[in-house]
Image 1 (tube, rainbow, N blue to C red):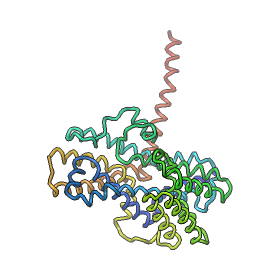
Image 2 (cartoon, rainbow, N blue to C red):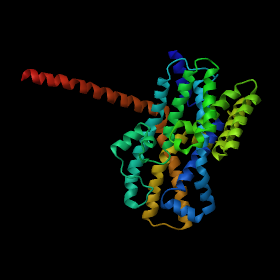
Image 3 (cartoon, rainbow, N blue to C red):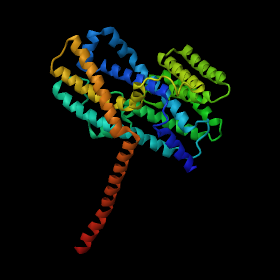
Image 4 (cartoon, one colour):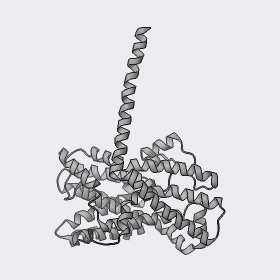
Length: 380
């Protein structure tokens, strides 16, 4: 049982076993998220919107749909790592959930720190609502626990709500697979909750701080993985397609239509082998690998770019586009550095080991304090 947990964790964190199509989709999604935020925050956004209204208006209106790609891919990879054959989890889900929390939170908190520093610098150069207010201890703790949206705290960086949702989705998926102790029941529970989300939860925007709202797209990704492993691929994907179309007939949502398209692409891609072979474009694997880092660090870069743009009082279309392209290039460069030193499995392991050592030292010193006090009392 313990060995099976180790296999799952190693499979989920293995950087070598990469899939080019997924890397490409993650790269495109990350760039769309960047351009959406670059079209939404600060004087630089106002400049590019005024200079190129159709292009950046489209990014502002539709770029956020790229999150659906991340949701479907996350569900697909979670099914691959947790229950590749549709089996139930044999042991407790808690070690896997804790592993996922550490995997997300170590780079996430480092990026939050960068955002706080960048906001303090940008605040001296511009007066804009895009700059977050000075962080409070409660706000920081809420972010550390991935509860900032649920508790109503202002976000310290753009897009970090997704990290909290990703963790909720993974935890919920793991619990469902553990609850379904019979082989066929585990994926059935996931598919039932997927259907409930598509027909009900995803239609209630009051739930958009909770995993239930997003589980439809996440579950479609998981279903695409399991469907591709069945002998009757067309039947299984047909069921997924029919259920989702019925939900769209009831209430059309472009985000769900996009999630369905991505899930079908991944399902057929796995079944017919082009998941591992297509596309063969050198830059995309790199961008796909650093996509989480790019997602995390682009907002601090954007704050600094906005601050400089405002400080030098730039306003021409050429200046706006030049500043945006430089900010985009700087975001990619910063993400590459961030991945190497913070997010990569080796770097993350070093950081968590150092934090564990520091925590042990603090606990050890704390335990000595009462003894020291007792010795003073004895001497008195």
